[in-house]
Every structure is written in C-alpha cells, then in structure tokens.
Image (tube, rainbow, N blue to C red; front, side, top):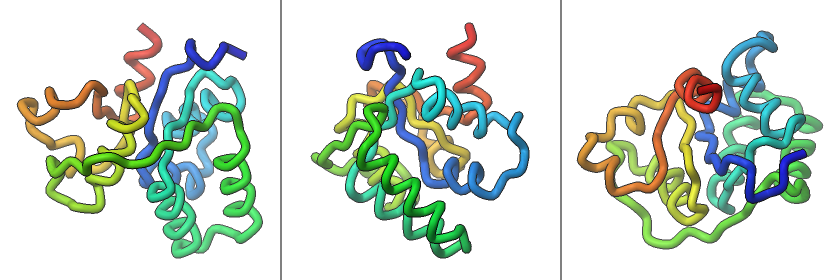
Length: 148
C-alpha cells in the first residue's frame, strides 16, 4: 500500500458512487476507480460532512440496502484512505448550487482531481477552472491521466 503522501487525492462526486452501486460491470471506469481507492489504496478520498451526508442520503433514496449504506459509512469514518475536511468558502462556479459543495470539498482537501460525470461541473469554463488547483475530469479521463 502506498504511503498517504504518495496517494492521489480525489473527490468523488455523488454520481460516481451512485454509478458504482448501481453497476454490475466490474470492468467499468467507475469500478476501477473504486478499486484503486478501497482495494489498492492508491487514492486518498477527500470528503466533508456535507458530501458524506449527500452520499448516504442519495444511496438510500435510490434503494441501496441499509447494510451496504452502513458499510460505506463505516469505511468513510474509519479507513486511512479517507480524509475528512471542513468546508471553507463555498465556490460559486457551478450552475448547480449543490455542486458547489463538492467544489468546496476539493478546495478544502487540496484534491488533485474531482471525478464526476456531472455536466454542470464538467462544463465550468476554462477560465473558472483555472481558479482551482485540481482538475475536474470524468472517470475515463482520470484513468487515462494516471496511466500515462
């Protein structure tokens, strides 16, 4: 297992976790990213109280079993590959105000990447993206970048 400082700091948008829990494809980009984090411990997941609440609430809303949600919560609370941060100033660059919490988590956690399939985040203008010290990428783009 790579030491913490060698792991890539990432924020996973809620849609990434939803895709993982709903997918049956273990070879998908999202499944590979979850494996890199949970099994191979090559990623350091950055979360905030707000993102954890959103993850758990949405998974419950879409019908994921209580047992699986509790397991995720336990992982988020106890794994060494998870860093919890408090949010500072909330950015306003996304068209969707809810997405700004994800941006704030990435800023506060000094993430290298925010991984998402959300157009509101992916479509932030290049000028606005330059304000951040992290890249906003799709799962496929992320895997391509780290394999280079």
